Image (cartoon, rainbow, N blue to C red; front, side, top):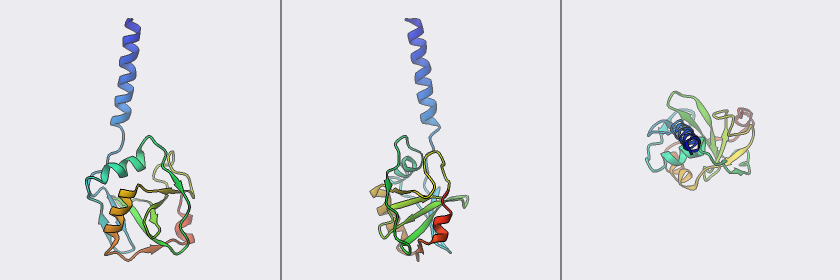
Length: 141
């Protein structure tokens, strides 16, 4: 019985540590950018969805690639690191530039959560979009 209790405590400790080590985005940690300007993502309801998309336990859903020339924006961390691009007229597709190699695969597009896409479209209104290009695709890691 004592061994069972000890094993249970160890398992609980591992679960707590893995949950605590998950990355949580705060307002402004991620920015939507074009060539000349970035807009911080600050909506507190969207931050947990972004954190889960980037670092959550469930696989991000794979989707089809947007067409060449489709609108696109970079998603950058506060320190300027470009995590990837979000693209399509709905800004609902993400291509990783190597942000989390264990989660995202080179050249594969992932579907952003609907609520995140809506927020990104709102933030993108004053920005002139980049365009999906072969050069942008070649940056995927």
